Every structure is written in structure tokens, then in C-alpha cells.
Amino acid sequence: MNFDASVGIVETKIAKFDKIQLENGPEISPLEVAYETYGELSKEKDNAILICHALSGDAHAAGFHKNEKRPGWWDAYIGPGKAFDTNRYFVIGTNVLGGCRGTTGPTSINVKTGKPYGASFPFVSIMDMVNAQYMLVKSFGIEKLFCVAGGSMGGMQAVQWTVSYPDFVKNCISIATTSEHSAQQIAFNEVSRQAIIADPNWNNGEYGETPPKKGLALARMIGHVTYLSDEVMREKFGRKPPKGNIKTTDFAVGSYLIYQGESFVDRFDANSYIYVTKALDHFSLGRGKELSKNLSVVKASFLVIAYSSDWLYPSYQSREIARSLEANALPVTFCEIKYSKGHDSFLLPNTEQAHLIHHFLEFARKRGGGE
Image (cartoon, rainbow, N blue to C red; front, side, top):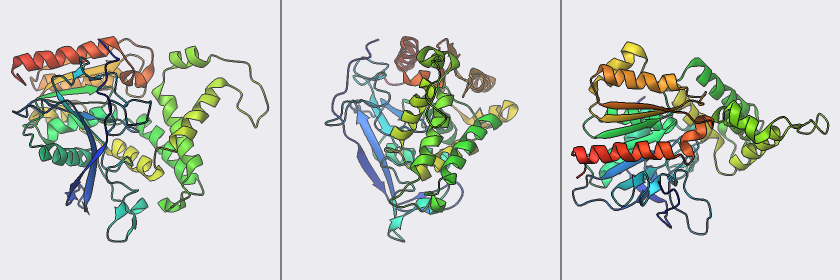
């Protein structure tokens, strides 16, 4: 699999809609959705693939923005000849509702007040994110997605798509995700949120031009620990002898996490971090019999991938999704990849993941889903 081929220079565009009705009642008006597209939509409009991003991702999934050297977050998998082959498929990337990378969220201007929403932005759910994506996809004249795919929070969106719009999705790829957060997963997010709230600059979410950078950086540091595995941290940092005093960082891993936190605050909004992590925590399709019941409406074929070293979303959670799909007699392929990089594995170039995605899509296409 060629990880180097590129879709080239791309740009993020904004689709505008009158409003969106949220799951819990409130209405957001107007609505803007940031998106990018790669490849060409077929005349029959039957080759569209929607890519859903994880917590800190955005619409820029592949290619390069002008004058930037860093490619999109899943560039290894999207492009000509890649797993999501843009010679065959029309690939759409979007930024989630409640985000801060172009789609309406806490940093957006509330037309009723003329000021940013801030903490007055209404709670949004994973279902709301999917509904906003549905509006975008429909605006292309697409009547059915060939596939929806994503990892982590993106995997939650992908599964929710098959439940919310069972007749609209032919195939689904769910990677390193869960049907609902465990108490431990909620706990990590709560500590991260409290780090932001404890920053004096948070000001109940009304921080204006002085954001709670220290709190957001600390939240990112906490989150980043969960994205890596013990093995990769040991390989990367080891246990170098302590140096300095109590006011300095003793170990290389500490310096690395500080860098990750400080670089994150320049590209993400603190309120969005709170809103999106709450959407993660409240997402629930259930477990066991409840999950099987909620997935009974699904009509899509599934590829479910987990990673052996992922302790944030351990493989048993993905396996439970696969078992619940099997209980409904749905076609599902489950694969646990042995890889040492932790939860972030799905973001990294991985030949086995690329081949799994490629062959799943090829089989679906030859089966009649996009020929």
C-alpha cells in the first residue's frame, strides 16, 4: 500500500444551512459546516465515503493546505491508490458540530447577541453531529453513502450513522471505538474538563481574548497519556535519570507532554473541548442485549477494527459491537490488530489496517455497492 501518494492542495469550504434542531430540543440558527472533498463524485452519486474525525480532528483529513507542510490527519489512508482510493471514491471530511475548526460551535457568533456563544452554546450529542453531517451530504445530492468510516469518536459517529439513517448507509468502518463510555473513560474526560474549569481565565466559559491556556494544555496532556501505550512510551522515553529541581521537568516524557499541551492550545478552543468530551461521555447505544436491540435497525455491512495495545478503547468494546451486529445477522468482519502504539495506532500508517480497509471496500464494491 502506497502511503505517499497525495490528493495535493486542498481547501476547507463552508456549507451554510438555515438551522438544525438538536436532539435535546434547542435549535441552532444559522448552521455552518466545514468540509473538504477528495476525488470525484460519480454521475450516479453512488461512490461517496464520509470520514468522521476523532476528538481533536477536523475537516482536513487529507492533502495539503496551501503554504503548509503538514498533511491532513488521515492522509496516509486517503488518496490515489490508498485505502480510501480517491481514483474510485468521492471522500468527504467534515468538522463536527460543536467543534472549533469551521463548523458552528462555542466560538461562533450567536446572531441573537452579536457575540460568541461561549458557554451559552447548547449541549450537542454524537447524534446531533451526525445530523449536521447528513445535511451536508444531502446538499451534494447524494441519496446513499457507499461508506461511513472513522476511528475513536469518529467510530462512534460512524456507528450512529447506521442507526440514525439505516437506509442511507451501505457500509461502515468502525475503528478503536465503543458503543458507550465506561466509568473510567468518563473519569479521564472529567479530570480534563476540571483542569480547564480550574484555570482562572476560564471565567465560566466567557474568556474572550484571554483563553484558559494552562487548563487546556493540562487537559491535552491528560488526554495524550491515554492515546499512547506503556510500550511505546517506554521505547520513546525510557527512564532517563532525573535532573534539575522540583520546579523543572525531571523526565523526557514530561517535557514531551508539556510540548503536546502547549502546542494544542494554539489550534483548539477550551469550550469546544468541554462540549465535545461531554458528547463523548453521553453517547450510549448500550451494551449487551440493549446494544443488540439498538443495532437491530441497521442494514449496513461492517468492518470493525481494534488494536491490542489500545487501553483507552480496549478491544473488548469493539468486539462487543461486532457481536451485537452478528446477533442481528448482519455481515460484519472483526479484526484485532497486534500493534504497540496504543489508541493512536489507527491514525498512524499501518499496512494491515490499510489492507483491511481496501479489501473491505473492494469486496463491497464488487458485491454491488458502487460498481
